[in-house]
Image (cartoon, rainbow over all chains, first blue to last red; front, side):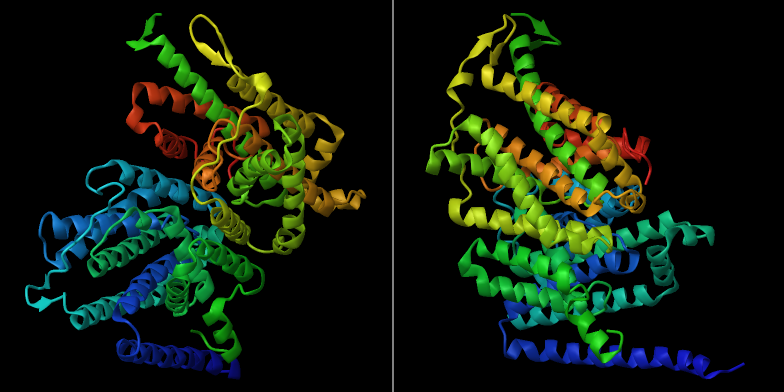
Length: 322
Length: 295
């Protein structure tokens, strides 16, 4: 029984794949051309935040879990990566691995605690856990307290590529970011990702179908935390700095904002949102505290009239999946 | 002077008192959050900012208009409550049919706007606020020195907390409120204007935050970030207590304040993280919170 609807359903995935592929090629082309036009440092910052936002989006966009404490993984990963690179003198690739592993471990612990509640409580618990670890960061010696860890060496990648060269650094960041982006895309479209979406839509139903939803949620949480940690470690190597700003609750808010602006639950939204917010902060830096006010205003506007976000609106308008 | 567990009693009681003071604020703020959550199903992230606005309004009334503490205690909650009503009508009302998380995001945005504005005009340093003359000084109770203002804060917040409890649990108005929490459509069918009740509830909850702000002004420095400092702790308090019960919110607030004070005596390094640790323990033993119904 092959009706018109069936063939349409068969064709549809291929059509959406094409729109995603076109968007991916466009994005990669832009990122390769960008350093000739824009400052590499700005681009690298935006790219690190893009990974951070994509990691966050994995949780809210596909698992329906709003974490308000993602700075915990981003910040602590950056501390550990900085410590490994500076105090232990490890090469950058190992420092980044250590940072990512730290974030994954913290994700296991925080995730196991937070998934015991849903919805609003989940958001409050993640926020509280992040604040607790912020206070710990303020006290322990490893983080350097108020000073943070400064002058982290960029080092030589695999012992050969000198990352002090801006172009080499940019290429390295670009490769890592694209790999992370592709990984997230694969996760979303795997059977695991489908179950995650099912849990987001109706958890009781997923349970009744025999899925142990807590495990799926925990795995999603750990993946998201680890990728946020990757972003944080990468950022530390690029900027040679790990500080309290990275673990502060405002950082958790910022990543929520990036994802919201770009489009919750879209593939490319978090990347666009990260570039938008980082560009805005760069541009508004001389205006001091107004940045906070404008961020708040963007939150309010997005929630009230722009809930699909930039990419969500674009996809809706073009009738494709982006 | 005597000792308890090797700690001088003076130090112990002083920290207990400080804990009770903090507990009063936790109780007032988590009470407001619980009242708002009951009616609007929204976690009011702006609560901390509104508490800060309360303290700043008291400061501004004194500085620019010469209006003192006692008048501020009445005027400020009304003013802050009024701004809450405006916020509810302008923004929150539009979110009623959406996922509750959008309410959290919107109120978070509002908190950023308010804090940013105050930081612009007042910087991040604190402004002093003198305590009223009538409450200066203190009494020596023999085992400890009790400053009058602190005694007043504890007593008055107890009165406000239990007044709110009485209003919601024991009066006709409160019964409408509780009924509307359970089933708004049915209550509307009985001819009660539920949307207006929701608006007023938000105004009331926010007014409580403003009142807490006035009471805090003479104790803590009045600074733009005083709200964001306290709100995350209050969230942990709310997770521990569960938002199902008014009395639960009050008791948890005071109890955790005392626990925090005691930790400061026996294990000072952990004093500002102890509430979060308790939250983790409670989540493992009773995920719904001590007084909560499971969600």
